Length: 177
Image (cartoon, rainbow, N blue to C red; front, side):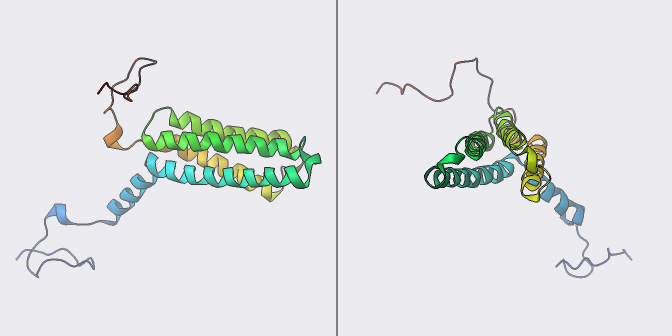
């Protein structure tokens, strides 16, 4: 008599009917699928774009409030906030490029994260040990590592030929009617 595999808790065929090897589910494949999803550049771009948008909103509000409430801070704290605002703009642009599958998206995102770190190191040297400075620095480092590690989806790999510099894929000017 043929020996049946141990029950896995998943609904299966009638007793006495053996599953095909390709129909078996394993926990390892679910973890591998989760890891593939997490390392997808589009997922990373969505998270990075959301964080850059939130950073842009926060830096804009903070800069605007300080401009009207405490204009004497313009030469100290507002310079750092302005650099964080620019870094958020750069990060948002890079996230759009990364989501689109452009090869230059990753360096643009990394440049925005590096500008955040440089602004913090330049203007918040005295408070580097505080949690409100350390936590964002660690978050920017983790986001940079994730950006470097993420991969383009297979459907975007090698599907577009390299064009010479100055040549665009977009039909501009539009074709004549």
